[in-house]
Image 1 (tube, rainbow, N blue to C red):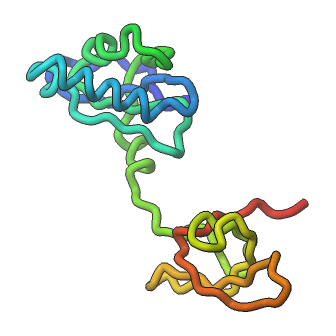
Image 2: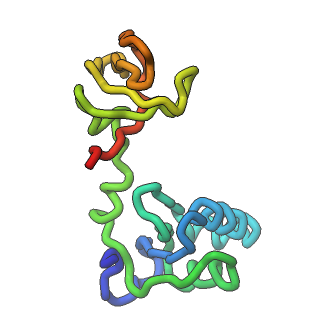
Length: 165
């Protein structure tokens, strides 16, 4: 993956972001278990572990911001679904792109084919006619309907489909 840099371990006291390799699909569960372990270990670990991040964009990895790698190693020791902590640390610039909030409907344009993921038309396919980014709404036409009727729906309920081959 190339996110963890081969850099020396950080000096005690300064927090760095470490990358923990997990089983794909278990990132959120591992992050919750690590959080519970931090709370159970007490004040020392609460001060040493600054943040735990699992992103939907990065499968099989979680980010742990800690004062020292040994805190992370102790927390993940014997944990199910954890494979290892990658050596070195991840620069903050690599993590920032996963922290940016994406506006709903990013990447959906008029003419795109989408699947409806919520509401009364869930599971149906549609073609996007127009998008109102201010309101977060899209006007669509159902592909599977017998007659075309424009419907306005929240962009949050749409998932872009890959182009047909």
